[in-house]
Amino acid sequence: MQNKEIIDTSLLEELAPKAEVLVARHLETRKSWQPHEFVPWSLANDYPEDYEWQSSEFPMPEYIRSALFVNLLTEDNLPFYVRDIDEFAGKDGIWRHWTGIWTFEEGRHSYAMRSYIEATRAIDPVQLEQAREVQVTNGEVPKIDSTMDGFVYVALQELATRISHLNTAKKLREVSNFATDERTKIAANAGYICLKRIATDENFHHLLYRDLVTESILIDPSKVILAVHKQVLNFAMPGTGIPGFKEHAKNIANSGIYNSTIHFEDILMPIVVNKWKIGQLEGLSPEASKAQEEIMNRIERIRKIVNKINSKNTI
Image (cartoon, rainbow, N blue to C red; front, top):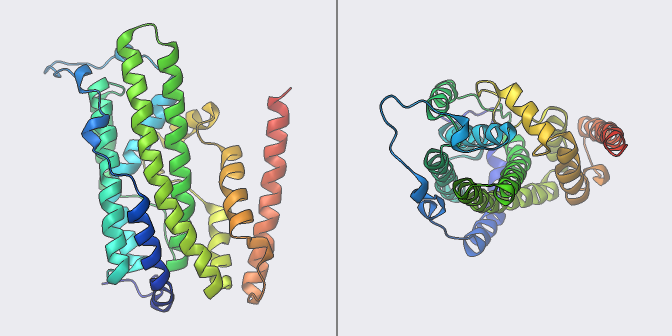
């Protein structure tokens, strides 16, 4: 039974024609690919019964392992994301059709990443599986309060995921460029190609959700403002339930794969400020007007923090 406090049937009905157009656009522009073609199977070997993983099997900075670990386990939580999307977007018509397309495309990300990691031995497979058990058993995902909240969250989250995958890919390309042995060079380059492919998918997903929010602004700007308010003040990547997440997130941030500067410069400014023009919306309810002011004040505070961090890094 769908949660009546979450699903906004009226909004979904008004958005349905636009959703039809956006899904058709997605099907026309997406790139078809086969996950098995992005895995360097020639590097794979059997895992003997007494096998104990060593990081020397695939030398790389630990922050890349952290990114691969978090990115894969995030993808492994797919069943719970599907459940939540059904709760805020419904199970009928274009919404069920799109969720099915999205689920299929996201599912191959985890297949491709896991196969790549196991073939190249990038991460301890036992540690990875134990962490997957914790992650999937608990099913911890960000809490969605409404249909509009869900659309805003996934619009920002898909872009954040795209950035994380792409920057991890770039770090692997650096490993490949400077590797002194052929196996590491091949393994790292294959990771670059695989994650770049996944990042492209994530961008297509982001564009669909981004444009649904843009359309929603024409329908009910106050609802959009309130949803954006929650995400600007409380946005969290969908990985908080992963064992050791805080330490992995710290490694990822310090490496420049994903951090507060990137969140500000590549998400808040281009999407919230420039694309959705949240600070310029008019005709708002009193609650939404207050939220709008708080959003812009928070973004300005983040700007000052980021400028301070960047000025220190240039000294």
